[in-house]
Amino acid sequence: MSAHCRLTGAEPGFGQQISHSHRRTSRRFDPNVQRKRYWLPSEGRHVRLRLSARAVKTVDRIGIEAAVARIRARGVKV
Image (cartoon, rainbow, N blue to C red; front, side, top):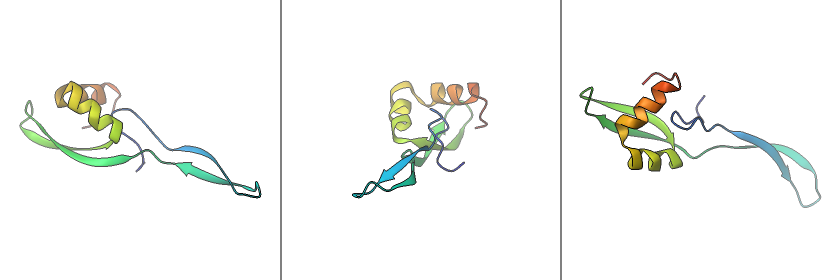
C-alpha cells in the first residue's frame, strides 16, 4: 500500500522493460508519492498524508479542508 495516493487514488502501473535485444522483463511504474503534513484548522490538528506530486498541487489549489473532504468521501480514514 505504500505507493498509493490518498487523494487521487494513483497506484503503481505495470508494464515491460524492453532491452536492446527486445527481451522483455516486467517493471513497475510507481507514482511520485510524498509524505506531507498539513494543518487542519477545523479540527485544530496536523494531518500527515501520503500524496502524489500532482495531488500536492491540487491541495494547494482547492485547500486542505476540501481535500480532506474528498479523501473521506473515498472512504479513506484521515
